[in-house]
Length: 241
Image (cartoon, rainbow, N blue to C red; front, side, top):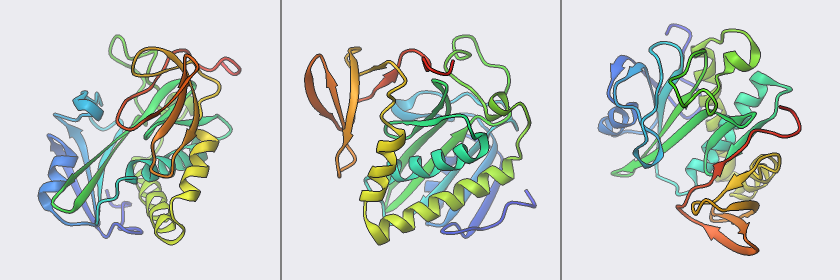
């Protein structure tokens, strides 16, 4: 952990060998500006309480804390992490699945979970970095940076890049508002190369993102706005896979 240093909005580093959840730990600390990283999580989870599988020492599992909470923070962080990962795997296409999953070739490389408690927002970030083997049922839905690039990656370096990227985009949001975030999402979040399904398992197209951060889709000829619902990717990219 010697190469991991405070950066941007995150002035305190906490390194853990094992923890149930970096989000839980960070929220218990109850202060902004933390970067909490663990080599192993025993109860890592994603949105809607789904478990997050990550072998010890192979992937990046960390939480960043900010204050005050911001409803659109998941999108802001998602844009920042997508940009960071795109720089690591260029020229491969890296896309964002609303609100903040990151996908490469139709498979998930990163998931994020934002939780709020007592005026502190905890942004959990899980990135598949050096993992090469997956549990049955995940191998067609998950991918790691190592699988994409063919080489190992330094976890400290990626943690620093992610923290720097989120700092830059959060500061940009405070200075220029949500419009730049929305424009970046519209470049990388429409998922035009994929089959996309809404929460009703109906084929849909993503057509817009509101200034509130809500997704606008068209399914069965009907336009509707998603606030807390989910979307899913069916098939991998048609053009490049």
